[in-house]
Image (cartoon, rainbow, N blue to C red; front, side, top):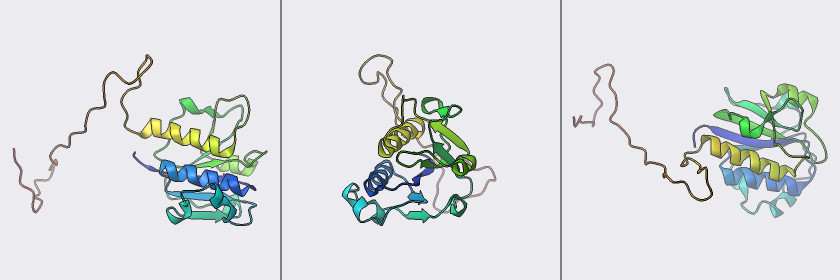
Length: 186
């Protein structure tokens, strides 16, 4: 998959939800995990839900406030929230460099966080989902958008045409420069 992404949450208070969110991010290949204004006593209890031990594999940033957040240049902040004007997830074009932020249990992203977001997306459901489930749906949708998969079949079952293997071409030399160790076989 091209690009990179991170996953995080604002205002989480249940360590099991932190663990589930970390495990979900790790499973989908997140570059890092973050929390903003988290109200957890530590990551010890989170590891009950995070059996992949994601802190051993990806960096964890714990920011105290929205103002403390720092993302790489070009990274777009994507809020996941049920608002009237949010973009529905199936129609959303995921940025190549993205940080996804979800709200707390029994709450929403703060107004300050929503104002900081480049995009707000919503999962088209009747009501809010568990933060771990919501993260899994958003990251799965990202994979479907940026991954290389065979075209989805319009009828039930597997795709009729498999994804073709990528074929690398020879380098294109625009300046006439020779690269040591490369012999043009044309």
